Amino acid sequence: MKKKLAVILIIIISLWALTSVQHPTVAQGRRGFGRNTTRIASQWYTFTSPDGDFTLAFPRKPSREQDDQGPVTLIRVYSVTTESGMHFSVNLQDIGGDPRARRNNEYDSMAEEMMADAARGRGEQVVQIHRITRNIIEMELWQTAQETGDNINYLTRNILHRGRVYTLGCGSIINNQEVDKTMCRRFFNSMRFTK
Image 1 (tube, rainbow, N blue to C red):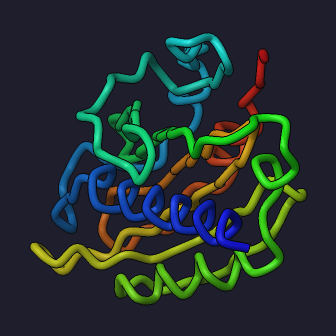
Image 2: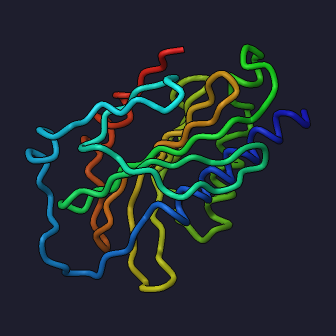
């Protein structure tokens, strides 16, 4: 039970890192941003992780952000923000233990509730949360930027695979604009594990 709670704690910290670092704020009404999915769709770049354990399609080559310290290992972050105001990111961290163990490949039955409670505790509005498979949980959230009061809509997909937590984020950085869920699904569904 302690190991399961530790895994959920790591996921919650990953979500916190994703939301606190990954969403630049944009003033409402800023020019140059708008939905331009045709342009984004034609520019996808296949990113391979440095250790070769996964590939993921970004709209263009992502840059590595500053690492953040997680409970067990560093949280590594890669992201892209497009000209149309969409932000795509992945962060990953190891949780330790046997990568083949069930608890390192499957979320606890309370994971959704704990993730939603953690998001609400950060002041975010949880639109929906659901388990896709035993090791994938997806959430839609609205986050208010304290500095500007802007309301940012984004989706996260949390994957627990072989003792590593992967948090994919996809959102609009334009105040009060709903995220383009079609683009997010394309991003999320492009992830492939190679190991």
